[in-house]
View (cartoon, rainbow, N blue to C red):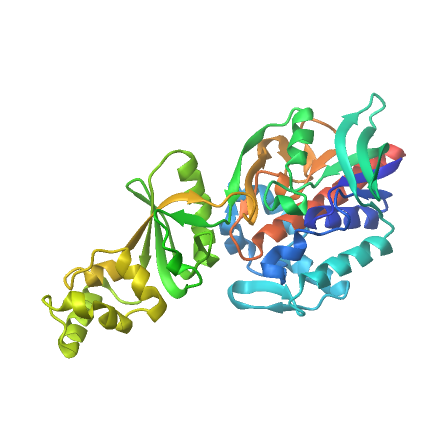
Length: 418
């Protein structure tokens, strides 16, 4: 019997276990993988974007679908608290552009190793290769957690008992890290509603995707997302073409709305403005001027267009841009300012950064992360119906909700033990 049992040793689960132990509770942490923090290891392309240092007023604008839900958890354990916590356990941090915070080493392993050391220091009992398959609440108010443990290829079943349980099992993204949606099943067993899940921060696949685009990165461009006849997003920044499709900061920013629209059967179109700093009229004048200086006319445009385009875009972009557009000298300025790609698909959970959807926020007490259905049951991290834009926001959701769940679960368990 322990006071608090945490299921899942990702970002939310680790911080929950630490905070519960610091509050004086006895804590067990069950993890299905052979080590903790497997998903942490791949965040930020292996560098681990720990958090984002923006103030709440701006930070909250990057949260979905209900930013206000996180407010209590954020103020209990904010981005500044996250930075201070990691520095207190030996992880020096650096601030980069867009207020992103990384470990000074630019290595996720630094973060994972520090969390492992802190868990040990505060006395958390961590059990690896331990897959939970059922959670039940007994008549005496305690929880019974049934699990299957892999001991070197030999599987044994077991049970653990606790006064409180925190479900921090993650979502469905990157299933190779152990995210299989197990927490949703636990939630449903206790009567919780699971809001429709779908991949977010993932690659968007254009129709007839030209593989010559793969590897090209466009800096300081504007991307507009159109769903049907409506403009639903307009973002400025960097866009990457990968083997999956449109990615990078801009691709990720628009992916949530694009994927949702595709799931609903809507027509999705992306418009790329390669020259966003110049108005359409001024850019059209520039094209005319450059054409006159280069001796390019409507008559010889087809013969000279590829060399002429070097004045307006990277060499590597010219061939696929020409192939994807019916260009004339008259429409060239418009096409450069409004390069349209119809989005027909997206890359699924196998490489999506985060899962949108999850345990309904209406059924969770935001001030404690307690289930409204079951006393003593808490949820934290990606298993909840809360996600965010790229830039450190999603890990902060995990840290904030995990810290609050850990503190709350410990207080509840210790009060029950008296």
